[in-house]
Amino acid sequence: MPVPFADLQLQYQTIRSEIDGAIASVIRDNAFIRGSYVDAFEREFAAAVDVRHCVSCANGTDALYLAMAALKVKPGDEVITTAHSWISTSAMITHAGATVVFCDTDGATFTIDPAAIEAAITPRTVGIIPVHLYGQPADMDAIMAIANKHKLWVVEDCAQAHLARYKGQQVGTFGTAATYSFYPGKNLGAMGDAGTVVTNDDALAEHMTMLARHGGLVKHQHHIEGINSRLDGMQAAILSAKLPHLAQWTEARQNAAKVYDAGLNQIEDVVVPRVAPDRTHVYHLYTIRHPRRDALAAHLNANGVQTAINYPTALPFLAAYQRFGHRPEQFPNAHRDQGRILSLPMFAEITPAQQDEVIDLIRKF
Ligand SMILES: *Cc1c(COP(=O)(O)O)cnc(C)c1O
Image (cartoon, rainbow, N blue to C red; front, top):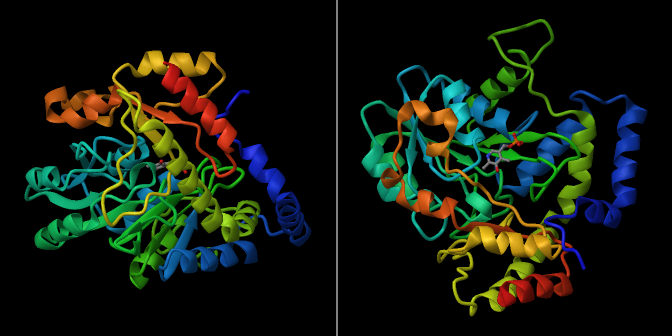
């Protein structure tokens, strides 16, 4: 029995009439760009993640750009982020005009090491972008303490962490702003690109809204030079149809993670994901460590189990950052992990039989 890495078609089948109805309504109402469906989703998502403003945009990458542009980063400014993430996080720092400063992860949770942040701060540092990677919150108490001490802004990258909590508080509510992606494979996914930036700061929300809509809120009144980064009505209606299911899908992922934990943690050489105390993990990805990762992946793939590596090269070592001349010993945890991480099939509808198959194959390996 083949086990896919994720199964978007299966999710669609479980809520098919709701999705089809949402799409039909948008077409009927000609509500393709902005309009009532986008307004409704913004209100609903803000309520779901406990924030005052949800500024929807075209994708999670633009969300990062909009936040930093509104925070007015400028050439010479330094922004600190993690060595272990998807490239959007660091690339948008550069595109917003600042300089990227990478920090190593903590060696256990795949999230940024607060001690490394403290060590990376210079008089030019203006902000920190922690990433709640794979769905586990970064150490927000420690990060906010550093930010407050040095008067830095914090933008949380929540692209993989919808509904995750740190000490009972939702991610995305600690920093000045937070960004989400609704890429189809994310825990809450559109059927195309979509994203949002959220904040409790009224002025920042208005500035980000203008930036995303050609620099103005009223047609032909351009107060600033903006970009075109809008959520379209179709994606908003699809997201509104899916949002009421998100809590249950998240619980299903967490239950699936328990099944993997129980089946895998006695197997020699397999390190299951470690969740730090006081954090809830929403398992966008279930990522193990294994010293012979490539051989294990080949074995699983040869037996019909799809896996992924998130990500095969840590950010500082990508060709895109050659200009910094980073060395492995500067980021020992991220460097070690890039060679041993392996993400296993994980989606809300995965069955115990599929998980047993994955676990058995790993045990045999
Ligand atoms: C997916 C992702 C993004 C980018 O989101 P897009 O919607 O694909 O632009 C940013 N950061 C992280 C950590 C992500 O996983």
